[in-house]
Image (tube, rainbow, N blue to C red):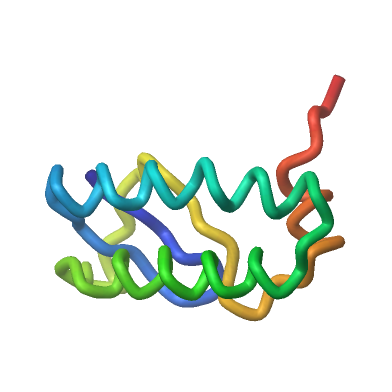
Length: 87
């Protein structure tokens, strides 16, 4: 699976890493909806670290990303706007 970290680059992650990311993603959404900024940032850093443990892709060759992760320094309000339901 290809994961992009916004403003950073793309990484190829394996299935085991993807499962870890999915578990943390559920916790991220809970922290986001509960306005738990410290917990949100801790989890976002954990997820980004997992993604970075994968294979970095050549930045000159763009590949469609399966998953896009906000940058590490994304604020809680920015994340809420990113994940807001457009409806």
